[in-house]
View 1: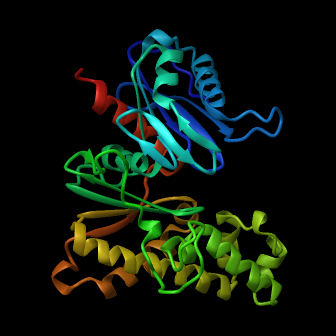
View 2: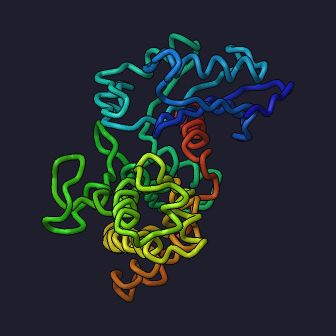
Length: 330
């Protein structure tokens, strides 16, 4: 999607590398998108992947927006996986097939401006803090259920992180002792019972058993077809079993958030990701109910749970804003 502008001035690049699609957003100094460029993370046409595809996506966005490289003030890129934040290296990203990828160095050489990497969920939470549903909050907790369950925290304007790596891996908190095996190999992780993939798997079983006739018509029992929008449509049209599966998953998220409220005392909790965007009212309602049951009474009115305001743009715009926060005064 292009929003070509003839305006002059400095531009920031925000890049979201999470999920099955990548998004490059070129923004003005107030982070209004000038041009967006979405592409599949992996190309079926030329089998291209890696940093070459990231760089070419940014180049295409610049070309579509009529923006020269010398206008770029900085680049922020939200990446999945284990990151060495200080060195700007993706240490390991299994879904991308990356190991020790020097992302920061390659971007700086390609575009002649400073670059910074951050966790993709951290980028989304920071975007909501700077520009969206948590604007101006003191402590923002973000939980983004998708293929996994990601988390992030912004505290007094800064992304909360470890010495070298990002943190808030809420998807690997234990939700059910001896529960389903997670992709990480451990039993009962939150994402093993609450991710979109876990919901899709349970929904596919419901279709196979004849308990979800509407979803059967919409998508069948193929996991690849059971996406967030399809699940939302099935619920809207009356598949009660699918609604309950989603509510059960949201309950686990809410219970985890209740524990995190005791630990972190956020004033705003932002829920994001495709599931939340597809059915915000249902999801926020159920998570809020479960969190309220878990938190101590003294914490009950200290926070609010809201859905993302920026949607698909959250991580890209957050990455651009984090680049500005990192480099603007240097």
